[in-house]
Length: 172
Image 1 (cartoon, rainbow, N blue to C red):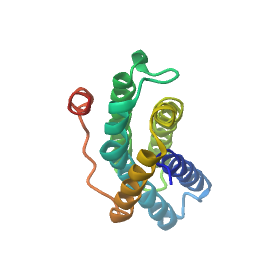
Image 2 (cartoon, rainbow, N blue to C red):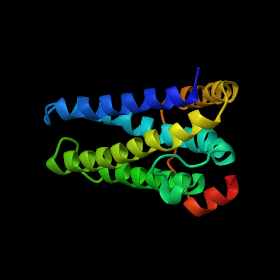
Image 3 (cartoon, rainbow, N blue to C red):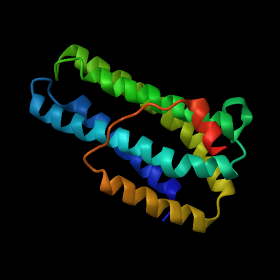
């Protein structure tokens, strides 16, 4: 088991759930509510799991990969935490609209854009950096913790934005 693969698998599931929402009739608010409820909880839990297990270790061993912000692991991590905050805010913005309304779909679409941009960066930067610098034992041990956390919080968590600078200072 490898934490980088678990994160990639989660990204695929996030993309799949956004795609499902796009294909549901706007009048089927029960289905939209159910799928969005699952997706929004999943996004929050996934981000928190990364912040608890992946990024602290990346800060210790990473070197900055590909187009990392300012070329450093600190920049790479700070950008990821900022992205998670933007995503939490985008997910919360969906609540301000009636399910199935044009505004609701627009807000879900905005969350999809924020999430997609973040996943692309993370896949090029943090995950690449980690695969290059973490041994298989570390990747496995973190994967176990990551999977257990997600399983324990399958119904979601309370989303809390974090100060990116304070996060990097704490884990750097």
